[in-house]
Image 1 (cartoon, helix red, strand yellow):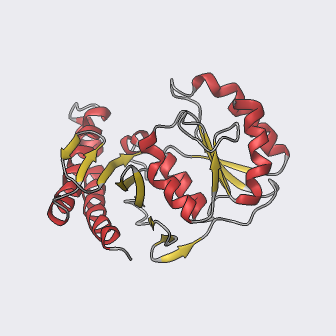
Image 2: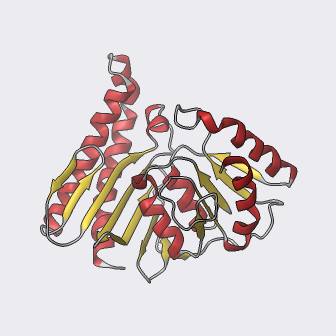
Length: 262
């Protein structure tokens, strides 16, 4: 295991303990009049500070950027990108689908990445050219080649950002059901993409995703042998529309998404 992954795991585990403990008192805080957004901001900022503490101590020459606080340390070497709680809605409801994501970039390219689920303790991580791992075991994406009995993931189109794509999303679900696939809905894009990397899911797609949402899990997925692209087949996912899938299933699912969403 690479030294930076070791440090990232130590930092993320400390933040995970803080998140789980804080979520236990979430209902009490809401009863005291705090909004879910206020509680999320407070806990997420605390988790970010926990991660930054470990990174600053180990790598004082690295830049550190967090989702809420922005750049908290400027350095001349690589850059850490941190999202302490991805899956805000489920977190605010006391559910367990939120994750911590961390990426380490050198010259703008990801070299190491980590996705950690504070509740299940699942730790997905990868280093460039060294494969992907889940809880210290090497992972590869699935060998699924047809939609029959495949399990795929998507986001439910209930937010303002996704609402315009609802009819297309529902048309996809109907078509996949006709072909024997099962679809699960997931709030955190990083978690569904990491599960594709581990072969737990055969494919996943997202609409209008932000770079910070997918940077770490897509790197892990690539190291695990997944293919990903925009709905038009372009290797660029800058628009935020992407399919990530097992190689043999990728060419089956891409035309379906292209037809209904592109």
